[in-house]
Image (tube, one colour):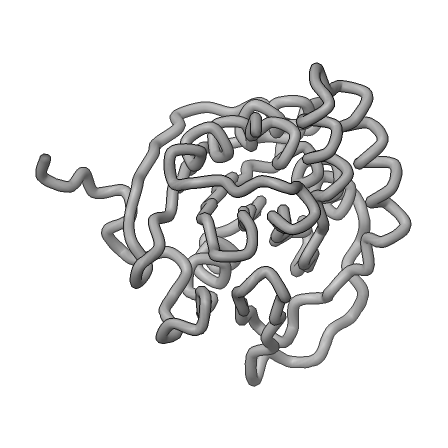
Length: 218
């Protein structure tokens, strides 16, 4: 399954959040946790506003299907779901999580698909962002491999706001998942990276470890 279709929904649903003014939110005193049937939970600060993207998803799926070059890719686009979308601050930072359930897809993905998923995300982001200075990493969370990419970015037509765009993808027992952050400041990036995840009922851990971009010995 080509990553660009899986991650197209990250871009199509994530970028519009940046253009909207976040509503007032409660003080940051705790976290809230999203749990997904594919097999993960993800925690984020309570003062981030969760946005319902259900009205945007059908149009994003339709566009991804129109760009598909095979029946498998069309099925992947139809099966992809927005698990979480949240934003915070002004200019707005956003976090989006997208899942692809294997039961819907009718096939499984493996760790060999991770680079394609992550690279496809960044390729798709270039529809809305000018990206520079990309860096990559691969790390483990328990028994799961995670592929990550980070780049500097500016919204096309709005170079005055600098973002850090970061995508982390993993394969679970029941599906694939990618988390994406479009962070307008370091605090938002830290909130994304330090968000606690539980993958397939393993012990909770921060999504992105401090050494995620450190090259490991061969």
